[in-house]
Length: 190
Image 1 (cartoon, rainbow, N blue to C red):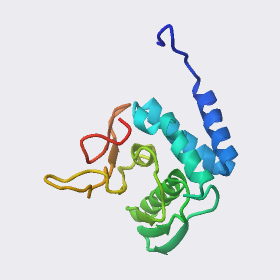
Image 2: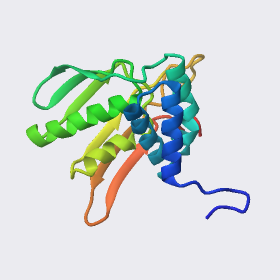
Image 3: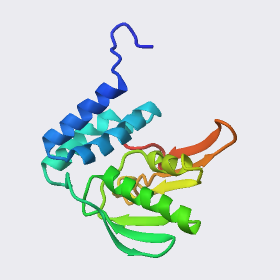
Image 4: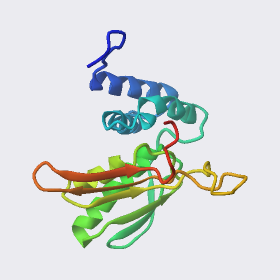
């Protein structure tokens, strides 16, 4: 329930706004939509540090050509249950979705799907990807490294990233287990 001085915005309106901002910045509609869905899920799940408030970072990254707003990841090497992907410096959610879709396919075919990527960018909440596998009746796991921004004990310089990890497992009925966390005390943006 919104407070008297607050407004409630529908999920569809939030998604439309984010897609419009990203396409105006130079992202393709497909890539903008993938990003918007991840950011929206971040807000819905209560990870406000990785929701709509991150949109300006992605807009700047595409406008300033820090990352590409269109293109496709490429599989560099693969086996029945594994793959190595080059994200081609695309938006992180595009690379993350590509990798998780591939991992799910491999898991269905080979019993396990383990996909790693290089050349990616900030991919939003790690839980988005683990949940995709869980919705297919699988155990899902997603993790990424980040730039060094955290100071190890007695260090004078940052050397560790927040390095988020997410695990998701279906339960009985509507029950499930989902862990989505940074490996530091808090995620950036909180």
